[in-house]
Image 1 (tube, helix red, strand yellow):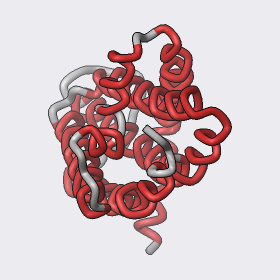
Image 2 (spheres, rainbow, N blue to C red):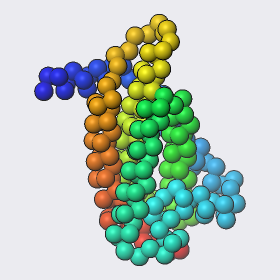
Image 3 (cartoon, helix red, strand yellow):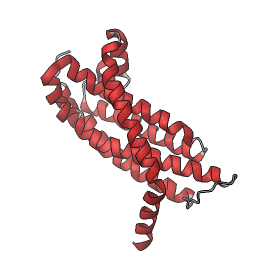
Length: 205
């Protein structure tokens, strides 16, 4: 237990700057995504929304069962987590800020689209149909991407001289943390796939 606490504390001490920067980048992405929807043509906006949300993508593919939305949400989130895992392992952490900014854009576009097109009703629906899973996805996303950056830069430091000393995360610890993160993402997918559609279905397309 003490070892686990030490690893967790050590992780956050080493990665605080990554967490701060990526959280900031994500917020900027969300704001930009919400603002840019007014400047995008309707046809283009609908395409972006369909590929930014499993629910709207499922609607475009005429999905009708909650299980279909659940499978799609789990697939998207698990594939994303695995992708970020290999980004860290391959030392490509410099791509992470771009990736998380794009994820922020997706969130901003989806929420902005619902509110802009369906007004106060869309705002209320988004509270129950979008925000709950985002409360899981966003912290998980920041943790996942920060971890990937930390691991990526740690491995790159082994082959170059850097003035800042950072404790190395073993590959096994990194893998375990990613697996735990995937479990958390699955809980978010359960809401997004099984509960969220019931609220989003109140939207009249």
